[in-house]
Image (cartoon, rainbow, N blue to C red; front, side, top):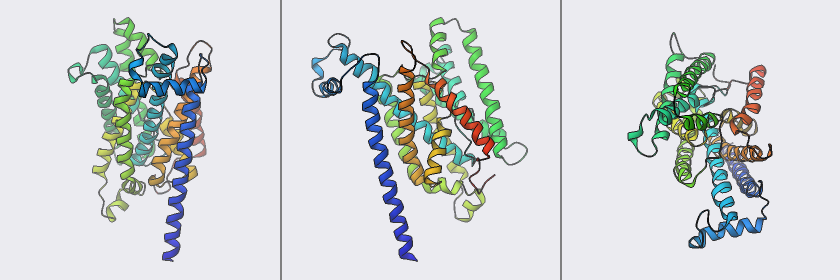
Length: 358
């Protein structure tokens, strides 16, 4: 019996390593293919040469003055590819965490209003100057504060009049999302900053077009650290699916963990909204697909969902760049076209329970 259990664990570990390896290969291949796609037809050799020159012969290039191919590859395409990978992985993980906290696989930063809270924080920072004294990343900090505030309010409102249920959490999120959106629209409507209004209107539909290496230098390590943190917390996340009482009998009081996880998840969502705008349903679609393939064990779910989310967002962004000639479709709009029907499908199928919870 003990031997069989050891063999089963070893088989699961090998299977997980193979899946992670395959996803890494697909991600790398997708990144290379995304570099080739665009209005300018570039050969793989030219792209490789440009990237190599940037790393080993940086002094030979001056942005925007020497080589237009360099600007296309290094300034336009590669930053948005890296940003799409970061945002896709981050939103997928934040969806997993919020689903574990509220014990419902229908939970998502967009549906629960967390993204709207981040959007309100960013809008207030850009148009009203809220938090400008916090430094050059004050927009991201304001987005995080908005996301975290809404996260806490969702839990607070859902627990009014009794213990929170799945329906109460979802309804609380929808109400708070509507409130945040209303205030964001009010700020935009009353603002006299025409340029800021135009950029925010487009930004609220989601886009990777504003990707810059300076932003990626902040987002990339932050997302990696948060994913590594949650991966190390896989056991606690698994216990959350069993419910508070079951966790207590095993010696864990998970209420404190919920608060910490909400803070870290809000950091991801806040800075994702700051960098790429409003993008919904990624945290709903990706975890659900990976659960169908791997089950609910977060030890396997977190790394695979991060990689699959990165691949999904990368191809979504690539499609947005080519689907309309001489124009670009906002990525939030495209993903919502897929995510909203997917959410409806889950509701109609009643696939919104982990089995041990409401």
